[in-house]
Image (cartoon, rainbow, N blue to C red; front, side):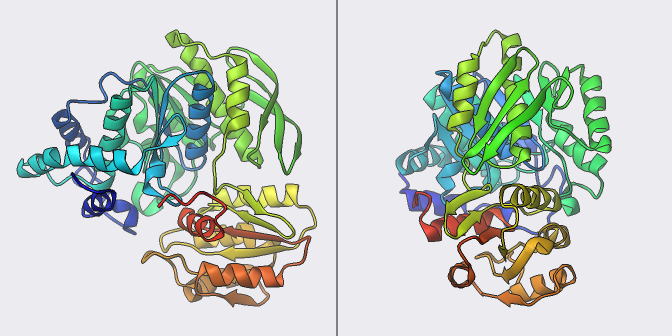
Length: 445
C-alpha cells in the first residue's frame, strides 16, 4: 500500500504533458485506445456513470464547477474532475464538494498500480500522468456511486483522456487562442479539437463564439445529428446590478425563465459561464432529470471557484486571477475597469514560456500605474527579464522585477495606497502560489 507521498511520486514518474512546452499532438502521445485499455483493466468503472463533459478555452473550469454546485444543491451526489490544480493535486477530484482525501488518493492509486504495471507489459505505450489521473477519477467516482460526473477537458477535446466517456450533455465554452503550437494557429483548427467531444446521442450547449469557431461547432453537430443550443440565442441573460460581493442577473433559458439569480464571481464572462451551465442543467430534463429553479439559484449562489478574479484582501484590494491568454486577460481588464473605476492598478505578472505574453500585456499593461514582473516556481516559467522584453512596448514607465511572488507581494503592499488595486495574474500556477503564500485558501498538503 502506497502512502500519499509515495502515490504522488509514483504518479509523477509518468510523462506529464502539462509540464512540457511543446510535444507532438497526435495519437501516439495522446491515445484514447490506450486510456480505454487501462480502464478495461480496472473493470470499466465509467460504464455505469452519467457524464457531463465540458470543453473550451476559457471558462470551462468555472462552468464545470457551477454545474456540479447546482447538481449538489439539487441533492445529487456529484463528482467533479478538473485541471490543473491551484494548491493540492487532490483538488482535481471532488465528490459533493469534498476533495478526495490523501488516504483515498493513495488507496485507489495503490489498487491501480498492479494494473498499470500489467498495462506496461502489453504492446501499449506507457500511460501518461493525465491518463492515469483520469482513470483514478473515474474509478473513485464509480466507487462513490455518484449520480453524475462532471468532467472538464484537460487539453483540446478530441484526443483528451476524458473523451473516452459518452456524456448525456456537453458544453463548449468560449474558444480563443491558447496552446496554438499544439491545437492550431486558427480558431477553426482549435474549435475542431474542442468539438471532438461531440458524439451522437448527446446534446450540446455553446457559449458565444467567434464566427469561425461557431461554424465548426455547428457543422460537427449537424454531422453527428446533435441538437445545439447557443448562449445569446436560445439562452439569454441580462445583468441587473453588481457590487464587489457579486452579480445579480436574470436569464431566459431553454425551458424557463429565472428573474433573479446571483453569483459571487465577478465579471461579465462569469455571467456567460453561468448561462452555459444553466443551459446544460436544463437539457437534463430531456433525459428525465428535473432540476428546480430553487436548486439552480442555490447552486449558483454557493459556487466558490478560487483564483478567478478573487478578492483576497482589502485596503488595499488584492486580487488573484488566472488569466494566461489574450481573451482571459481582456476579460480581467474589463472587470477591473468596471468594478474599480479610477483605481490605481498595481499589476504583478508572471507567465509561462509558451503563453501569449504579448496578448496579455496588450490587454492589461495600459491599465497599470505600476508593473512588477516575477517568476513562477516552474522550469516552464518565463524569466522576469524575458517577460520585460516581451511587454515593454505596452508600458512606457519603469518595470520592476522581483524574483519570486513573496518579494513581489511584499513590494506591492509597501507601494500601494488604500484605494489601489494589486492584481496578481498571468498563470494558474502563479495564482496557486499566491493563495498558498497568503494562506487565503486552505493549504491541503
